[in-house]
Image (cartoon, rainbow, N blue to C red; front, side, top):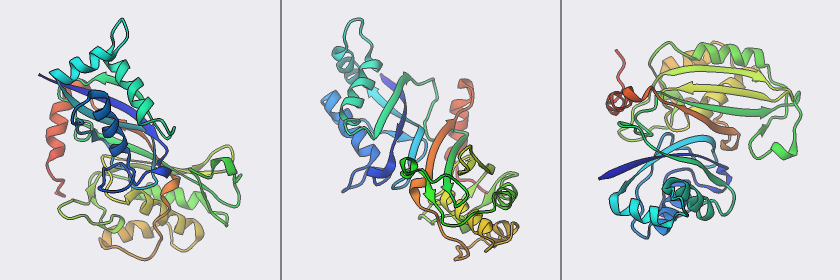
Length: 284
């Protein structure tokens, strides 16, 4: 018997070398799996995550899953207080161990629906990126998750460029991704926009079926170049169509980026979605 558990969590990425476990250095996956090994007194179940965030990137709405065998489930149930609630116990224990520094927090743990896969069942990931330019309030208390820019940016031009980049359908984003062996750069950028919040901070909201390595920060960098007047609003699309990495803009710092939410289809469509996503994306 295998019991799949869904975890919803958030973290401050400043103290982590990204999500994925590494041989050396602190990572979110490494901290959580070490905590799981302690709680279960066994080899830790492997965590599968919706979005493998890079070093320094934050998350408010990350999703992961793990599989427990019958012995691990019984061991977990034996730790709870009456009335026993193994999943509440799991959340409490993980937050007491992995969350002891306060920079990672498991919000909830639930039994995953049939066919659920945190990575492959997802239909979209949504990020926000924050920039405080010269026209915004540059709040020192927000500096850990907001990039400061010394000059005023043209948010209208940035929004125009972003909306031109979004949709419809699949496109090859090689110009905006760091290549990884065997990985595709074909993605569906479903939405991308810019607006100022009440403090004048520029907030990018970007959504895609998935993102390749450094893609969001590169998209933001292209829009910042438009906001500075270094690129015309139509040029980011032309750069994408050229299909090669470029020096026309800078990839923006990681600390301004937050994974805010992951979307899934109705429960009855989870398994089909996972099967579809496992195949490499191809342009028609």
